[in-house]
Length: 619
Image 1: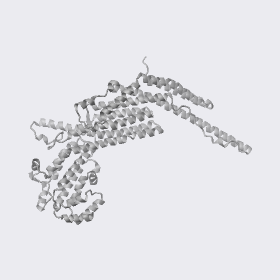
Image 2: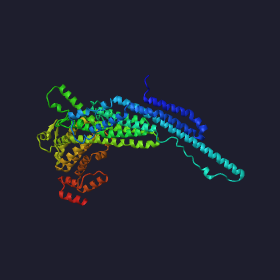
Image 3: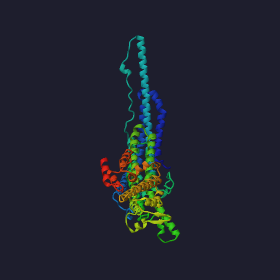
Image 4: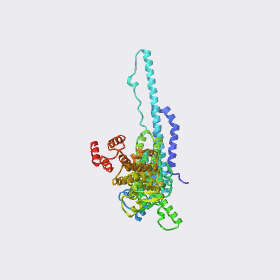
């Protein structure tokens, strides 16, 4: 006959003990409480269970070779951590050797076993801990009820003695009895010791369990790191059409967070506070150390590097969707090329989306664990566990910060292309490409003009019927941004748009410093900057960015451009002081005094000497 699993054998012992106590304790407590028979029964049952269960624990630990397995698991855990942690700071590029190294599990399958087998063994160990913890909790409850019953009897006896003294006092007219005896408090019996052989056996198994479970978690993540990524739709909901419609995520996040959630919830299900505490700490360390670093490195190596204009999936001087006009080939070949590049962009963006998805999953994990603490642990244990679970909050913020950092790095990668776009649009730097792209020419029925704000009446009228440089610049930015917006999660798409607009605004401000302005030119500048502001608000998805002030706070360089345009549209120098003062009161003024002097000095109608005198007095 097949022998029952160890947790079944232990459960039978615990169930027998519970049945004995429930059947015999009420009777013994009623008749033998004065001789402490109730406490003696509890102690007797506990000793018998301990003598039976502890050998079962010892046999289980020995049969499963848990000390040796735990020692190897600890070594493998350290090796896996060393393999992944620290590589982000070393700036090592992905090579064939490094990719082969990522495929190695540091001997987990050979020394410990397959992931499925180890997971089954952890289920078995968790059941052993869970059954023992349930029995311990029942005994604690039993001891508490025995002491409550004894306290009630003590109070009843005190009240009876008090009534007897009062009757004697009424009969004799004299107060008798001791005051101290009336106020004697009940002292609870210490029925069971705090530390027993059974609690030591449970603690030993808990130590082995958490060590092997932590190694299993890291090995499960390593399997996800080394497996080919599977892509699925992100399913994000944007407020505007076209944003995040093709956004993807990889299976890496789902696999790693599922493994973390399974390990954490299994430990919490045991009800053993030390096991849950150790496992929660280990999960937080793995998420905030290994997973964060691996995902950040992947975002850089397989995401941002592939989106570099000219060297990656995005075109340099031409856009992804217009570059197909360069080479010869059939329309079918070009359509295939476009589809492959769009797929490549989507998959590169998926590595950036993963960081944001991971942050959301960690928030969900924290919520689930807090629910587990509230439902499965007492007040004294809940405090420590809740504080430990709160460690996931800074880890979630770390993933969000890594996500934001990846978008900032992507925006930095796009800056050379942005500078080229601004140069081509404004036409202020001489090169073969610039000369061709920005020279005055006819485009359909409209005239294409470069940046020029030194306008008289005729030039201003011509500008009204011409295609301005700002329209061309926004169109060029769209060609670069739209493929990324379609494949990024809406929050990340907004961050990218703000990063691109920030770089564009800084470049435009540098170009404006080389211009001269008339009053009409100031009006044209204000119109162009408002067009850029309108373009920015249209490309941002979050509802809060419908507010102009919110856009200003999110993108200071754009706010500076609008302030410069306001400054250059004043009719009289005397209005400058009022403009600056009112804007500062509203908290919407970022220009330094030297900047204001420099730009006002570009107005052909204003004398530099008067500008310096006016703003010197204001200073």
